Length: 267
Ligand code: KIV
Ligand code: NA
Image (cartoon, rainbow, N blue to C red; front, side, top):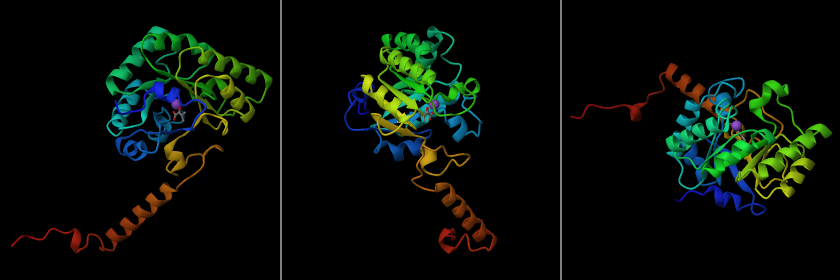
């Protein structure tokens, strides 16, 4: 296969930074593919595309539909699809069944699921049975309702030791890489140095082996809120709004359509 495999991503540990962005649709996947090592079909799509307030309402069917769309646009990047809330926590058998649905129905390269120590056994069950898994520790958006909001982690000694144990457990679980989100720099650095698999940071400093961001955030397409860790590389939201305003003005003033947009009768 021409796409980067999870094994090749894993081998990038400690080397050139691994470049990741989210993608949810075919046209965006086509645009991002040549620039990225890994494209993540994140359950952030619930908020970014569907206007949900958190990722809790995202379903397996939604992830599979968008996973298929992204696969149609990708030639070269490794494609990872998020397992949504409620599809893997109950038991390792249920996790396996749902992971296989994602792999078989989308053709993607791996799945990602959130959790530290509590999910390590499930990840081991999956990876030993042929499902490549990316972990996700630190801030875990699917736990927003028990964590009391989206806050960076690793401030207290309690949080720090929990994340150390999570990193150790995920490192030993067979996961090929791990996302570390919203984590203070010294801890992200320590965990990256301690783990033998790549850490992909989001709001977790430059010390990680790679970086991931939500595409719509860096493009200025998602403006409900912008976390501190996002850098805006464009303001497409403003440009779309200006384009729509220009179109509306020209329709109302009958400047559009002009002669070149109009079919003449062939004579
Ligand atoms: O859902 C998502 O987009 C994510 C990342 C940004 C890591 O999980
Ligand atoms: Na996610």
